[in-house]
Length: 414
Image 1 (cartoon, rainbow, N blue to C red):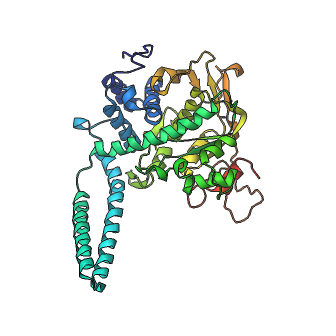
Image 2 (cartoon, rainbow, N blue to C red):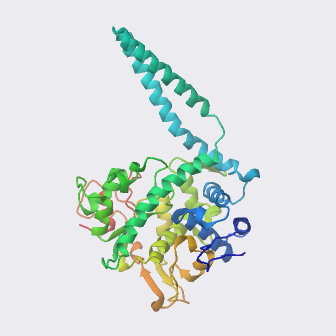
Image 3 (tube, rainbow, N blue to C red):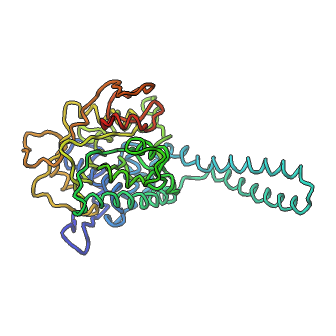
């Protein structure tokens, strides 16, 4: 396959159709090293760079990633559509937004109808009737759209616009750590699962400076009433973060049925062999790609940084269980050259080792992340009333949402 990774003008732009051929081969042999590295490349670029900058046919690659995440396969249907099974997985979720609007409109129409009955003012009654008529038309249109065919382009445009906003915020935080004037080392690494599937950027914790995913950070390092931006709190406390998938894809309510077993998609990501890449389940690979990105950007870790994962137990347990006897140490060849995300290719992943390996020596060690290996069961740190998860480094509580006191526990902050 012809690449132009050495050309400043074309910055590692590849022929997508040929690249896609390698992905198809992955389904035949998911343990083959070269195929694994091609998969890592597109998963990495899906999270950390604009696919339009990296591939001649970004839509084909985009659909390949979507299919893989929702089906465990890189196969496409005719016309390069996402597969039927991927659509089935997405269909219910993609209705939710319209369902919410429908409920809101029905409630508005009901309330306006009650207002109309009570009103004595003729002019006000006419205005209310006009609003009811408009809302009724909108309701009819939304209801009709519920059963229409899922249009992939519309779906991904939303994923991509969401990614662009979140990507900028993530890179802004990273840039502060790699600024030579700051001389910072990361002591704490926070890992979430995926940004919300929403065009409303305020739903993301770095924009809202609070909420379900932001407040636990404030509670851990500052306090939940703090007016300080969460990105500033993270930087001041030598903490950095990433999501396992930086693109806001809908996974929260996605369910699959495999071998008559119906479970959340994230359950299958962590347990089913279709999402096994080499010897590692998908969440493990995504964790490693996130760490790879930080190291490739030039982020420096403390000798023994703490990791805390604020993802539901299936996702985090697959990571902790894998590394329970394999310390998470990252080795690069000392001649490794840092590149922009869009210039990263499958060849670069041959130069990185994410576990203790006999071919590596200490001089190549970039980060020892072995603090992740603290599977303490129900360890209490001076608090009562908290049920602690099986793995100390998981900070999702019994509601499956991040918890500030559990984050403190994961980071040994008393």
